[in-house]
Image (cartoon, rainbow, N blue to C red; front, side, top):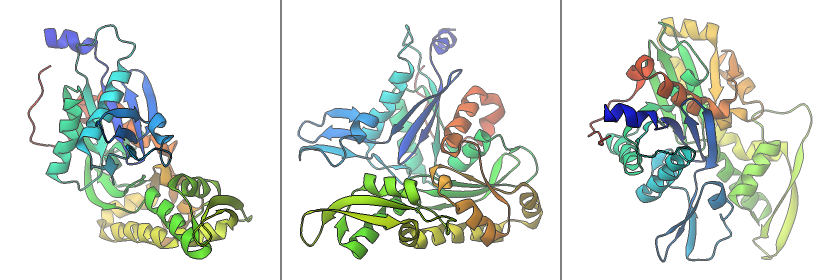
Length: 350
């Protein structure tokens, strides 16, 4: 009885625990938070100084003893303590307007396909130590499919391509389960690094991650555009050591990212080749759904369609598909309980 009473005062939440950004869905309220997956730590004392947007503003601008870092690499926990603090921050923020804080929320967390049992446990343990009562895990393509309201329970093929910051997840879903999945550690962050390497090699210019991401969003594309686009980027000349500003075009940025984009296309084509014929027939009718922040890259849907001969569409609000799916799963636990990953865990007291 006490357990049920406490639960009424606890906001169950869904979390897209991304390499680049964390999004939080609060039961009954929708998407409430979207912040960078960055934590600023004082290396002398171990104290957490900032989390999320405030920490992101410190990247590349901190003194030696303050480190602004991402606690997740390719969607997997690389810094357990920082991940725990980040989850605690989100859970406590979700309860800011609650006058009664004894309830321990149920939390659904989206994670990449193919993570190991140890990596799953790391996410669950971090969540429980951060104050969650029960942590359910759901694979990101499954969450994304739920988020865009695909008929995942039907006996028909649904093809999902979810391009995040650290990983590209490709999956075929039918009858509430993943039939085929591939996880490629080439995604938004790799494209940013490609642009950094290109600027260094072609122009002897050193630029930061934020600059690379900004130019990717501004003029980046996967295939030639109808109109030429250009942008200025600022950095440090590696020869003179002095500040320099150069102009780059959409063709430059496309050339920089070409190899990584080819890897993503190859993974998609490999998945198509491995898909059972009956499911492939369904996919030919329903098409490929392109989701995640990387899905917003200009012309990527067109390129995938040209390479696979399958209609490709960007889902509604692709950036939030995974967290919406996690949130819908939180709000409909009985309907979606079969999509949660089974892990060996001990439930925390509630």
